[in-house]
Amino acid sequence: MFTIKEVQEKFGLPASTLRFYEKEGILPPIGRDSGGRRLYSEPELEWLQLVVALRDTGMTMDHIKDYVELVKQGDETLHQRRQILLEHKQDVERKMNQTLEHLEKINRKMAIYDLLAHGKRDFLI
Amino acid sequence: MFTIKEVQEKFGLPASTLRFYEKEGILPPIGRDSGGRRLYSEPELEWLQLVVALRDTGMTMDHIKDYVELVKQGDETLHQRRQILLEHKQDVERKMNQTLEHLEKINRKMAIYDLLAHGKRDFLI
DNA sequence: TCTCATGTTAAAGTGAGCTTTAACGAAACG
DNA sequence: CGTTTCGTTAAAGCTCACTTTAACATGAGA
Image (cartoon, rainbow over all chains, first blue to last red; front, side, top):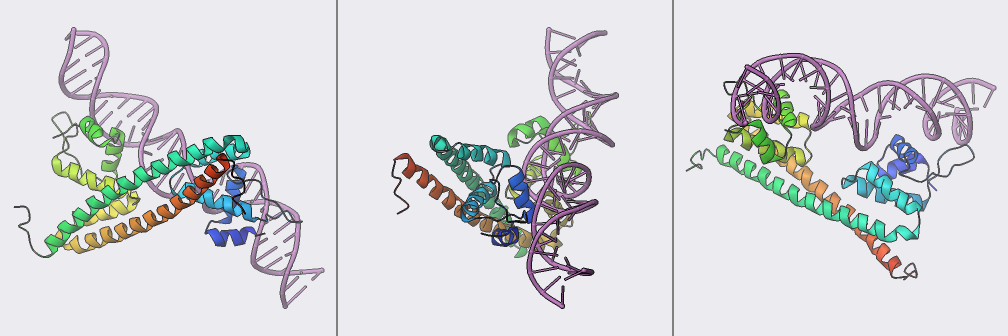
């Protein structure tokens, strides 16, 4: 069991964000100690890890919420959930390819700077 | 020379965004026709292409603006500009590696769904 | 027991990056 | 010549994903 501070440090997520995720239903309701303080358990951290993976690969909070709803509905939605992950993964791969193209553009720009830096101003010929 | 509508179609950027970029100094002031309408020329489109590459790889508008300021200052800033692009590129590459790790997480989740779908509920042994 | 760090909540506030609105001008079409 | 389309501006508005604030509670250490 982990306090909110420990989770904050483990994941690099502010406590305010952890509370916000719980309020929004992105995390399940977290158990409390006698004083009403949150105590995170392993499955909840596992879950948080997937949420972070989805968020950092560009899934919107609303879509993550939809996915969480399916998890709550149990095993009947396993296929649907797999499909959502698959489509998201394909999305991410498309975006990565776009990013690679953009990096190419940036590389070409840098190459031009290098030519200019060496006084080779005849590269346009 | 291209009208704002043509640029909008070429780049998939709304005209409102093109006007917004110009207002913010992210694009140079665009020339006008006799009726005060914007006419984009080739160098401006080249420039827009780099802006889009930087934006879509996660550079903030403020940083793009800083870069634009250096361009305006001319050749003295060539080295500094190359350095900014280099650092941004390294940043993007770090983020891509993070994304690959996140994809691994998503893949493992999908694999679990596959095992469950085939009734192999003994995978935890 | 006092104090101070750490936690709690609901609600308001923030910042980035556009997008919409309103009011108007120019110009192409029938 | 009228009307519909495309453009212009400044300013206000919007969405997303948090973040801050205010007011209060708990619990550990001196």
